Length: 261
Image 1 (cartoon, rainbow, N blue to C red):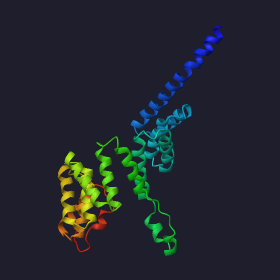
Image 2 (cartoon, rainbow, N blue to C red; image 1 turned 120 degrees about the vertical axis):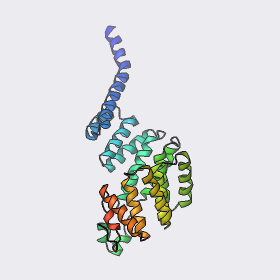
Image 3 (cartoon, rainbow, N blue to C red; image 1 turned 90 degrees about the horizontal axis):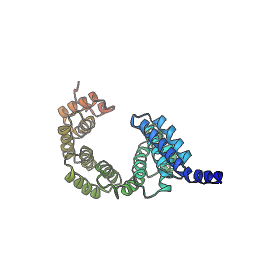
Image 4 (cartoon, rainbow, N blue to C red; image 1 turned 90 degrees about the vertical axis):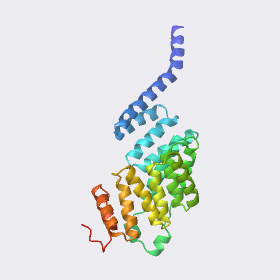
C-alpha cells in the first residue's frame, strides 16, 4: 500500500519537477546571455529543450542566442520551431525578422557578383528576405505597437520594397510619438536620399548630429549626401569625422577634387 502511495506521489510530482528543472536551465542560460556569454547560454538552453522539447520558450531563447553568435541559419531553425509550437507568441517573429534583414545584407557579396557571367546571374535564386522580415515585423507589431525601433526598421523595409508612401506615413507617425527618435530620423534621411532629395536628407542627418554629436552613421550619411551635391568643405569635414568615429569606407565618398586632409 505504501509503495502504491509513493508511486502515485511520484507520478503527480514528476511534471512539477520537470517544469522546475526547465525553468532552472532557462534562467541559467539567461544569466549567461545577460553578460553576453552566448555560447554558454546555448549550452543551458539545449538542456532546457532536452528537458521539455514541446515548450516554445527554450527554442526562442536558443534562437536569440544563436542570433547574437551570428549563427543565423541555426537561429532560424530554433525560432521556426518556437513559432510552430506557439504561433501566438509574438517575440520570436521580431527576432526572426531581424535575422531575415541580416540574411538579405549577406545574400551575395560584390566579389561573387563580379565573378558571374550574365547567364549565371540570370539563374541566381534570390530570396525576398525584405518581404519575409516585413511579414514578421507586422505580426510582432500587432501586440507591440509601441516598439519604435521595430517600427523604424519596418519603415526602411517599406522603402526597400518601393512602398515609399506607406513608409513616409509611418515615419511621420513615429516622429509624432518621439520627435528625437534617431533611428527613424535616419530612415527619413535615407528616404529623401533614395528620392535624390539630398538637401532634405542632409537636414535629417544634421538633426541626428544635433541630438548625438558622436553618431558616426549620421556623419557618414551626411558625408555621402554632400558628395552627391559636391559640397566640398562639408563633404571633407563629415567624411573625416566619420572615419575618426570608426566608419570603414567613408573615405570612398571624399570627392576626388576635394583637397581633404
